[in-house]
Image (cartoon, rainbow, N blue to C red):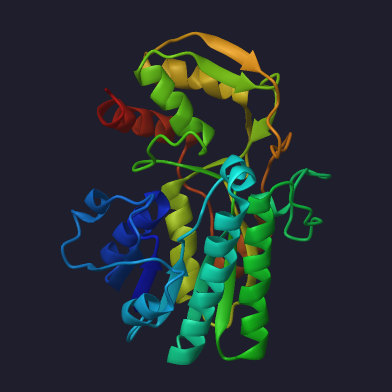
Length: 310
């Protein structure tokens, strides 16, 4: 399979690139390096790298030449960032995705696998959450991901045999996930622990999250990309959850590091609880999460100690 990974120098993208290469696929990467890192691709000299932005149609056409499947991970990520910069969020996540889809249509590309988010659901009304749960996003980020999903699935209806699979990630963590004040709580807490800085837990800390390791997310992408006759939206999570308070305690124990913990007010746009129902992706794509949380968390913290020191 000849694959293009947009955002392939980023956290999830670089892990997907590694898996695709391991499985013998031909890989190109398009990345603006705004949030991606060229060093993430240094172990992969055979990867064709194109420096560019998905908002630039001309560069997309260069990157997508002779491609069979596009794994579209390039995005403006995070609830808080989207609230502060909603226009950029919409330009990258909606118009960028439209550019990817138009390029796929123009070039006769077989499939787009789109990286979506559990943020499309908003506050959960039932647990675990299935793909049929109401979609009522609480932030511009969730709204733009939902809009991009709808575009992908509309194109699959309009331009068959073109196919689109949208993967709704829950809270992804793992190697190559660097500190970002807008990002996932695990790298934020790791950054604070490594530097012995105060950790702030927003709210009472009893909110729950479904954390899924990046190796499982990469495999879900691969399964979606090689599948035939499959379209739709699917949850990608671990199918388990942990409170933020318990997460901090596990991170302290696994890292051997400690720092002061304080509580702040709840953040706008954050949901209270999160837990993925994985029955659909198991049935259709044969996906099963494999990374044990505790050992995967330790591996990440060991990596973070080397990456996040001052």
